[in-house]
Image (spheres, rainbow, N blue to C red):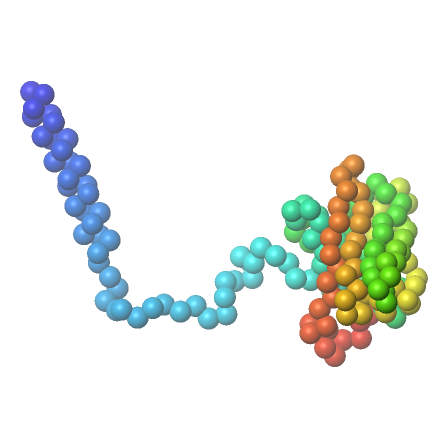
Length: 174
């Protein structure tokens, strides 16, 4: 009886393996490769490229948060966003800093809390500074601008990249 059971089990295994091999060797009848044009759908793109205010995004941490940097001719505004760069996230700090290099010398700019509707100065997602010098420096080649802030006791630092190509014909009034 044990021998019969072993043969029965061995036969089922061979049958199952044999069926899988036959199923996988069938083709669609063509040796041509399937080519997708345009890349994956936007819904599958894991990295957002623009914030809700149409500004440049700064990754903070391992995409735990994002910051969105916008500016006009005289001022810079930074919005703190969630990991998907979709919603503003109020943080418990009154200021954040932008560090950069101008003419080979390090400079630091402090942006202060500018609460959005429903926020307070102590818990804000928006920070601003009026400084045309900073605006010019952010657009300068080689400024190596970095944003620094602390969220829930954890320090975050991210590189501010300004993409001139995506702003062609754009007045920078984000």
